[in-house]
Image 1 (spheres, rainbow, N blue to C red):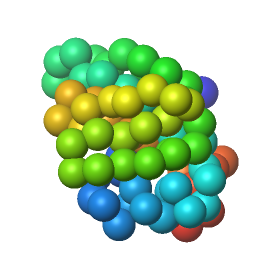
Image 2 (image 1 turned 45 degrees about the vertical axis):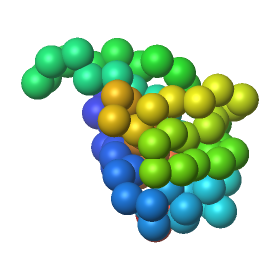
Image 3 (image 1 turned 180 degrees about the vertical axis):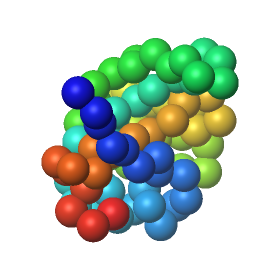
Amino acid sequence: MNHTYKVLRSDIELSAAALSQVRVYVVQPLSEDMVEVVDYGGAIEKFSPSSVKIAGKYYMRNQFEFRVDVNKDSNGL
């Protein structure tokens, strides 16, 4: 199964995802072509320049990727 996703990098993208209440996945890059899904997540509760809060947990923006499924949840993000 092929999944198309968008990585949320900017404050604007994170804000749009938070307002839209889309499911955001938390992914940790392991190497150039390997990643580990850390949390299948949920809606963004809050974010700052250094972290994102999803489902009651904080994730550091410089250590994780935040993704939305373009085909399913993004609604134009």
